[in-house]
Length: 417
Image 1 (cartoon, rainbow, N blue to C red):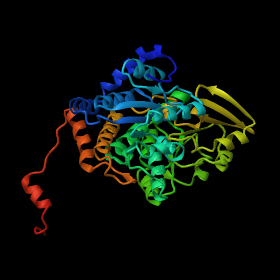
Image 2: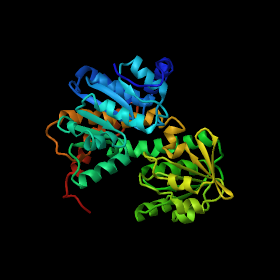
Image 3: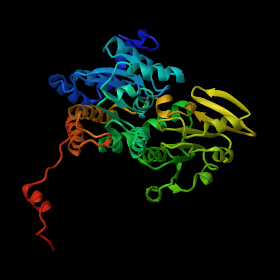
Image 4: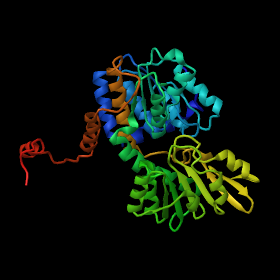
């Protein structure tokens, strides 16, 4: 079996991590048990580009239980847990290409390595595999029957490809699942991003001014958690509706150029480029901490930050100090997604629903192979509801059901005032 990991001897620690996460992933466990009986992915070779974490490992185990041949590489150079990668190889027989801190050349070598296995399905976290297939591995376009995409950033890229007529394969946008973005993006990103900032800096958030750029589901989660820890939270937005929502949720709203001079911490969660730009860096106050929780390291204009700096040093692990005149600017995790680079990412119980969505999306895509147009799809609503039902079932929670009278009333129009 081909693989490229840091050290196979780390497998014992990784297995413990995988099992610990698995204990909190009850929905995926139920799906895995069904997959083992039914083998719905038999015949599929599935190339996955995801964060190599203990939660991802449980997804790989479920997909393999469903009959798929699974190959995994990292979707970010800093998000890999090397012990998990080792255990996937040694204990679960999953070819894995991921090393924490790998350079850009190694990262792309690993992307090519999973594509070398000639997959007929791909699973992305940022659309790197799909992009590579369309740009440099076009020979695979005839055999890849579809892909699934995990992130907001990836869906943005894929919808842009569809709009420009460049998308040649069908893709299922897992990020659009209600059981994904309502919970993973809000509660998962909210908690794990704060976790990453605190692990990197060990600062007290109470009393600090915390600027959140972007009030999508991820931004909502970060703002909510920062407020809960006692920060004064300012939200910056380009969307009038989201800005109004942030205001009514109790946050201050203003342009980033005004907010940055007050910020003790500023974090971008937009999926866009140069959100925190050179003009903002120049106006920031001494000691400001900059971080981002989007998928790619472009939300902070790092080239401009480096150009402005007279001196750069590592202040702590995952914390770089840039001296600009008489002020210091601190960049966390090299400008990469702070929740996975400086911490461990989302808790397993919330990733349970997201990865249940990935597993069911892969099954749906494989069942529909050959019948789908090259465009971005969303998971059928009944499957999304099924994930929520399984989550409630696994936690012993019962809910009410409509009576016949209620069903009749909702489906009729005759009754009125």
